[in-house]
Length: 60
View: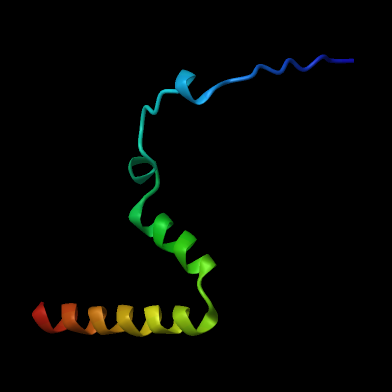
């Protein structure tokens, strides 16, 4: 049998050492945003990404 200790921590006792944007890649952040969108909005994002891909291809 193990005992689990619980300690109360207050907000003023916490120190942010790295922001979320520094720990999550842009792609990871985008994926998490997509999970929150409706299917219709995801399709809009897909269309925009395809537009950007075509634009990049023309510039190269």
